[in-house]
Length: 81
Image (cartoon, rainbow, N blue to C red; front, side, top):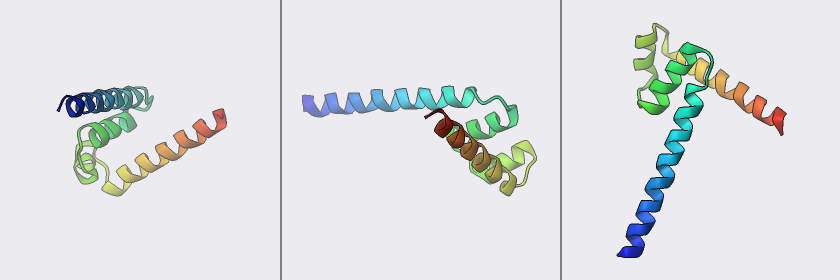
């Protein structure tokens, strides 16, 4: 049992650190609308339709903002490598 408890605690610590890293990454997004969308989607677990209603955009526009930002972030990361 102790081994399972230790494994469980390690997994919780790992997930907690990962969540904190994601939240820090989201807070570093410079565009406030994109940052709000990412926080609602990835941290709060809202669906795109709900987010669209809160930020007064169509669901498709919310989806496009997420996709565009992630593509640009991926390109920027690859440029650093």
